[in-house]
Amino acid sequence: MPALLIRAMIIRQIKRTLTAITALMLLLPGPVGVFAGDAHSLSFRDSKILYQAHRALKVGDPAQAIRIIEQYQQQKGEPLSAPFFSFTGICHYRLAEYTQAIRAYENASKQKPMDGDLALKLATCLYLDAAYEKAGYEFARAYRLISPPRADLLYQSAVAFYQGKKYVESAEILDQLIGTTTVCNTAWMELMLSCQLELEQWRKAETIIDKLLRKQPDHEAYWRLLSQLYLRQKRYKQAALAMDVMLQLVSPSDEDLQSLAGLYSYLNLPLRSVELLSKAYGHRPAPDEIKTLASFYQRGFDYKSALATVDQGIAAWPDDSSLRSLKTQLLYAKGDYEAVMSENASPVSPTSAERLLQGYAAWHIGNWGKARSFFMQAMRDSRLRDSAKTALDVIERILQSEKDARAPLSHTTFAAKNHE
Image 1 (tube, rainbow, N blue to C red):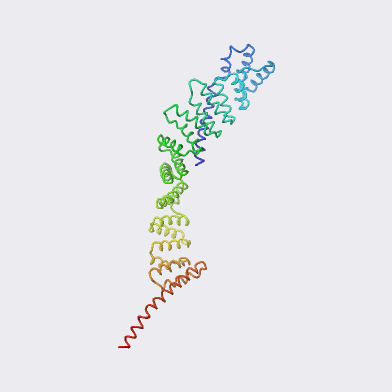
Image 2: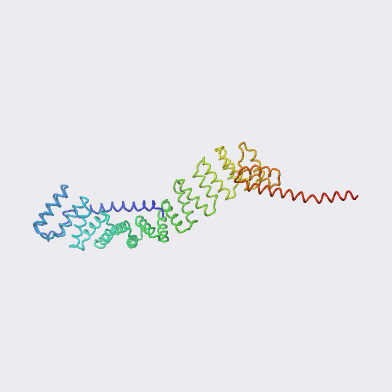
């Protein structure tokens, strides 16, 4: 599949996720809010220590806040309660120490397993620490615990699973998410599309692209993906049509034009191919490109355009003998044998291959003298010597047969005159 397109699509998903996660951490209860709800279960000393740690965090020193709590834990000599772990989790998060933040939030969650905010904070740090599979499960748990349900948490879960290469799990979460609404959310559908492509579920991917195109029919990337999807299924006609639509929506690159030309060539539509290649090659195609254009015209039996293209090439590249040879071949294939022979008048000496074709052209119109002359010249090339010699031998036999056929008639006529 088109890896760059999929990568670009997923990068958009990741950027959305990181932006959302940053917003989530800002919206979650702050350091005071973390333990305010647990104030009734905290001792006076616990509250005092948390207040001191909060002041250190407030002035921008999360490391000092962590030290205050660690010193208190050593003095206390017993496990701390959930508010302490949750607070140190925030401090480590501020220091971008995600592994330590994860450990703190896990300890807090063990004490308060039904706390949706803790689950969300743990999921966020797991995601930022690249523990994507675990983050996926925690985002899903946060979705189940937080009321009212928040669809964005399921979406974050699906993105995390995708980044962890858990495509089946990601798709299952997205199925659940998409089932919550009748609205086609582009981000959700794109992520589901990426999952199905990774799972090589081509028909499911095709259905999703169809839905996306109904919403955004002029989206070039969707048409490109659809074309690639058809190619993977060897549905070449549909692939060509999808790519054709795509090229109508953008200024096509030469590579795109040539790719589509190749598809039409495979579908045996050479004149459509040459139309696209002419755009790709520009106003002054190179000799090899001229040959390609001419070959497509020839496949479409448009010899007039093929010869005109080669003539333009000869005018631009007069020293290129291969273009003159190509013209001779085209004239011969067209059956214009007189024109093939007239190429002898070219100011540049014809090649031995051209001489061979001129010999065959003279043969076709029964001009044995010129045919013999052309074949004799072609014999100078060792690579063509056998072909030219065979042709000369055949001509000699033909001429001898004609001579023999006339001889009996001449003898009979002479005898009859003597009898009279």
